[in-house]
Length: 376
Figure (cartoon, rainbow, N blue to C red):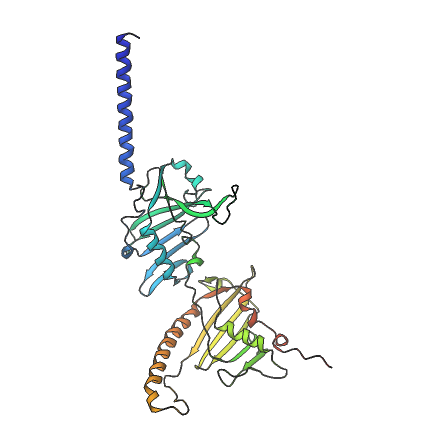
């Protein structure tokens, strides 16, 4: 190689090196602009106080959580109250979450990491968008595939990864950059049913319970004269005490899996009606009907009546105990009135309830009757 060729080669290398260096600094600038630095917060500019709406969408579901005057609500469920604790926990986690990995990934490869746009083919992620009270977008991220690690409870060398340890995320204003965080964010689901406030009606201190087909006389009725008294079956036959206790206990501990915003759009027939009267002068009407599809039931609840607002003095009550008992009664009454207000509001919705939850209330009279002992 002569001197002239050497100089030409040197110049070419300098030019290529300069171009490569310029490209490096350009990519570094884009990387810095994206804020996708390892150790940086995923959502550094998002403030919880500014968030008035959260939208989640994946390939199957969409949920809009809206902040209202009395709390959060699920719009896709007719404004049914949302689980504030679940929303708060997720928001706090997202605000504090830091980036553990950052890689440049072409947009066409997003579906491989389950970061594709919902509704645009396979590999869709879960979009989370935060908006303020005016509807303006505050931030938008896409949650993708979960990062799995080896199960620490399975020490075998051939054990497969299976414990969620993080998640791939498409950060706000991403420019072909995907990050990973150290939390799988399992609670970030787009199914509206997952965000419903789970508190249901709670019929306590039941005095009578009558159950039968809708529009007809009750098939069976149980009563008791005192709150801790023995249950009795109206009419002929001896009562199966365990069946009575199971039915009454279910009235105070029933749960649901979903809410029907418009129950009339899910018509049901051959309903069973349970009427429960309590020692607090309240009446609960629970309408139970099998849904057309699946094994679930539709349950509708109405509550009527008002609790006594004056305390009846106890037998042999001492004057020095009156102030304490009056105070306890006032506190109990306040909590009861708040609960009744929430329960009366349930009448506008229908509830999807598992069959096992309503089974104790759908028993026939024969099933409520104790078996006769065998003759000796």
